Image 1 (spheres, rainbow, N blue to C red):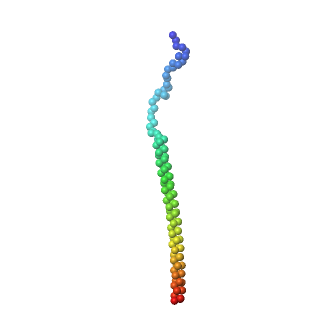
Image 2 (image 1 turned 180 degrees about the vertical axis):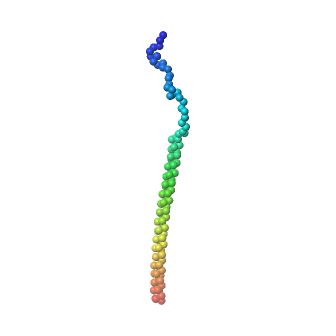
Image 3 (image 1 turned 90 degrees about the vertical axis):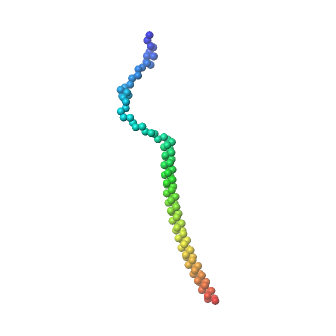
Length: 103
């Protein structure tokens, strides 16, 4: 008794070419993949560190500029106080001179 034609077509033997049967001569080294979580954490830490360094240098520069401006203002105030002291001293001398003339 022969198999029906439908069953004959579905019964195929397994065949492979000689290329597929060869074993690879040099295996590729196994790479440990960097997962999304580790890469994300590394990127976050790197970005945070760079942003922190940038902010630090920005604040340091702003502090230097404001310190220079404050120093200039202090020197200007000191000069104004010295001029005022000289003016008050001259007025006191004039007042003392007028009081001596009256007495």
